Length: 275
Image (cartoon, rainbow, N blue to C red; front, side):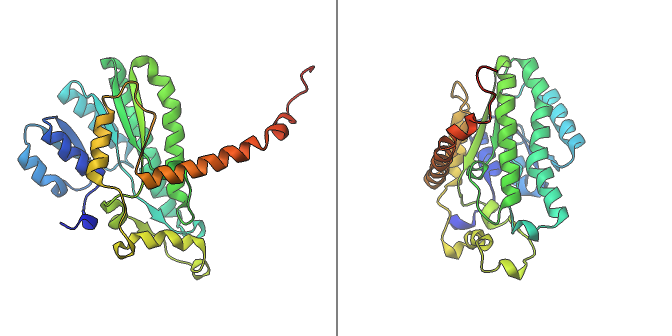
């Protein structure tokens, strides 16, 4: 298979590697036929569940039944999500509602659903797929960034809440990878011609493999996620990809420099010490 046309994402890659290691996996999918081969190959160790993560009741049902069947689950991977390209003005209300429900609310509700079980069993690990776009923002990708910046804040807060229960949480921040996320499932809003010559169109360039392939190897990235489960304490953030790290460091350094320049101004808004 052409490397740039791998028609699956991190969920499939993680599942295959875990099953090859002899682990038991419950995987949620939108189409059962997409994993029929894995069900046939690993009937005793792989169970596939249909799930629409925008349905909170369905999330809870799958979580409840999975823990009831397996008794203990050590690692939860929250991986559902997709990308939406377009200037903010070009996005429809329905597109906005759906990506927030999928990428942000769905992830929040999955984490909330598993926490009681992880507390009761004395610990566990939650791996939340984010993106280096959870710390860096590009034009033409505003709602995707809104969901990823949102889940980063949620996880960073919850991590502190659940640490006393020996529950570790990790935000995985991949850069571009050769998966269907980039080359198959990304959604593009209806275009407004006024934006055609502006920065909002720049991200669309990367959706065509002819313009160059994403540098990230899904197999290596999935292996790194799996290896992180054994790290103690759990790493809060894990950036995957040299390009992602480089871009993130550049943005964070610029942000720190800008904030440090405001030190005197920020202090000027406090009450004087004598008051």
